[in-house]
Image 1: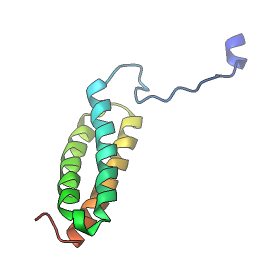
Image 2: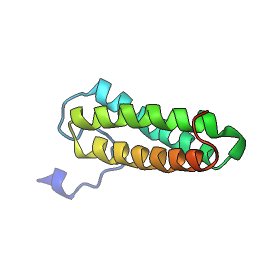
Image 3: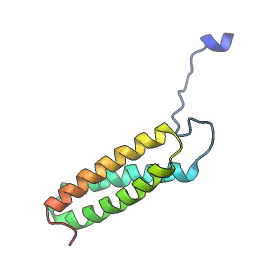
Image 4: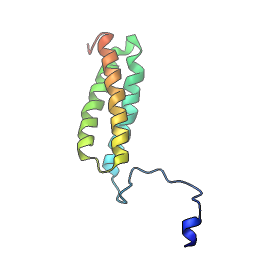
Length: 100
């Protein structure tokens, strides 16, 4: 019973809360988050609307696919955050001139 009163020195941050490894889903979830944030940041720059739009589109395609195959709640949180950032970045890019 001593382990019940012992405090964790290092809390673990993981996307594998079910105890199994999901390297493909984790990698795609992280890609969705990072690419979504990049699309969001580039969407604010008028001169970069073309690259922002295409990054946002690729992020949404990958993000929707990985959302279908995701295994844990933590993965879904990361994916949806990336999807929202990509959507806003893509919308800003469309407002600044679109894909061409």
